[in-house]
Length: 309
Image (tube, rainbow, N blue to C red):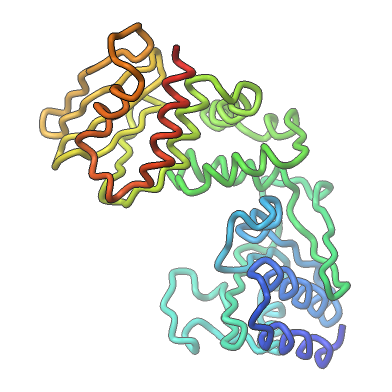
């Protein structure tokens, strides 16, 4: 693809106000990939958020397009040909701005974080055709799942959890290969997701789904990382939380931050005189329901309680 053709497609994308985010990103990635290959004979590989966007069929929306490829400066020169400018020129102050470029008309951010794939198998790269008939090279499914699992474990990036689940549940995954790329806690997290797929109605699986699906503001939902691997806690007043865990029993707890004490309130797995509606009302009573998706919360909580009976 020559520069004139590339700029023509870029202009078409920028003018199309009805274009979806996924279509915009994939078409843009196709133009960049094709032009860079034509001009400097470098094969770019899509990694990061756009690969997750593709493997989740658009459930996850990324804010940028990440590529890896050698000859960093030459790639940046190609981006400049296509109308991309430096972060400084765009007036955007971001850490790592030297590997990023911004396109004002597309409102598109491109990042080249590395010169080659790391912790990934190049034989698993897939090729995707765009609506313009151009090709995109995308990191393998298993390798981007592994990348997101590592980020969740080592950098505590909780937002990746739903993306991992979506990619595992909606694609054909080479589980033995994926397991071979992970270690320690990374394997444990993968096993927890696989348990959800194999046994989605177990208390542990239901609670994991509840944690991901709740719509809570940051002021309401707080996670305390402790020995309780599957703990979810809700702030009910300053320094005091109420929560649930499935390990070793499905329990309701109260936690006081000042006293640094976790006390069990109620063992849900035992028979009780409470009806389910009474139990849910008791659990939700101290929570500000204006700050949560009450219908979704109640539905998921009932699923957890049903699974525990």
